[in-house]
Image 1 (cartoon, rainbow, N blue to C red):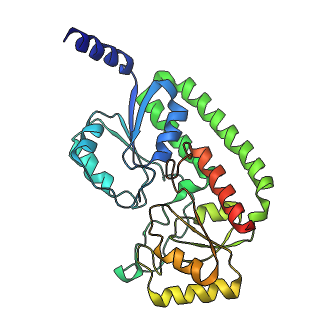
Image 2 (image 1 turned 90 degrees about the vertical axis):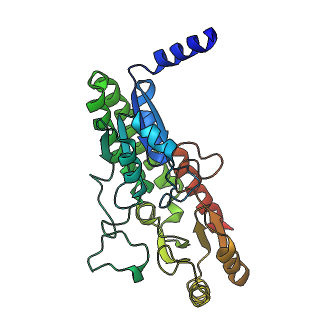
Image 3 (image 1 turned 90 degrees about the horizontal axis):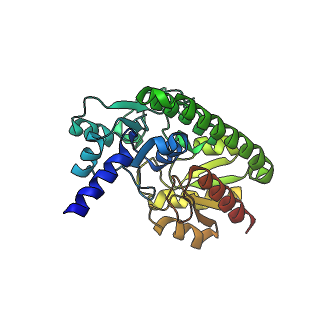
Length: 292
């Protein structure tokens, strides 16, 4: 009992004074960890290897948020489940931060949306973290939130933001040279998660395995994809690891298109343990698939 008491006091001492951060996705967790360092504790609700659109709300998530100071959400109608967690936490002191607030949004619908269109987001495509330059904008938003929660950490947080910004900008210069052969290459994606990534690195998205976002591929749609792959000489079909292999394997069998799994978030695939590693992995995986 005495040992347990000492351990609890030690843990309390370690955590005392730290900003407690909860994030919707692992990408924000990693960026927050980079900016906040030892001045924060941070954990993600969604795992990197699961679809961030659909997260089962558990009481343990509400308990995490009840003890938190800051909650970082994706916004743009992607993590709508976070609202239930936040409400259930009954944490009136929680600082809720929408990390999409300063993002240049792509694919914002201009027409009326209805259920027949599939999983369309009225505020635009919400997968904005898949552009590393947007990662800098996200980091700036997180930095401002951490300063509000911990004003004494301003100098530390801003210095970490500067380092992160410089690192990403230097890597972008490297990637633009190393992966310049990706520019103009035609790719079919499983789900429409990749417009920000594709625009940043110059990929041409010709189609999706899903006929509409969130809709299971039909035989008619797969026949259409076969014709497109053959007529447009599409060499690569890329997918997130949580989708079924059934349709991609069928397309590979019928056309020889190379199927490659890429990481939509930190932790989606073994070895993708940081926000930077995610881009390194995806760019290399697409390049290798295109060169087969």
